[in-house]
Image (cartoon, rainbow, N blue to C red; front, side, top):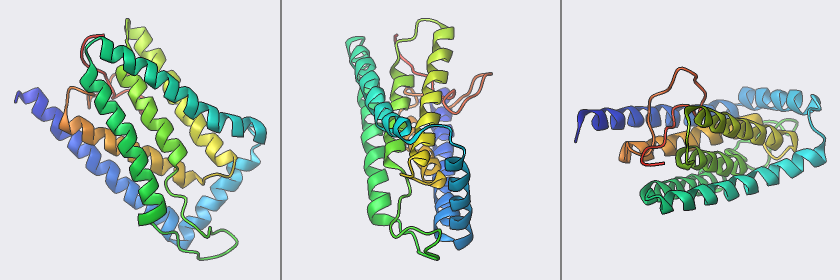
Length: 225
């Protein structure tokens, strides 16, 4: 194995470990502890009281963003396969499926939410958000598989996808479907799974970031476009 490939794997492995630790730490702080639950509840109240979107609009966006992201991901996935990037397409599909499965299992089976106070606690666990997990995982697929033609186009796609993920996080809170910690946990989970995929195959995404950094700027699709 070449030195760049080995270095890429190590960087992805380190990033996966850090993101996994952050996921566990956020769960312990915001979901398990009473002060964390109270802080999360206050942040929920601040977000929903801002009135950024009406409830019907937020509900429509919550569903529409997932459907739109899935449609775009399927199209760019088919294009990638036609252009010979079938391994990248398969890996992105695996990342999406694994992230979703882990999100459901962690939320419904593994993780618990203690009820410290009925005024700010939930009777069931909602960490992490599966809606945001699916949207973020599909966003990764779009960024990696998009058939870029210019550097400017690459930036536009990344920033558009990032904006869609931010909106998905926001509407899941505005509709009271999830608390802020839930959506942040989803982003950490998808980032961890994506980094694991990068550690397995460094050709999929680059662990490096460019001068203009965004949370998805470190993702760089490889192979012919």
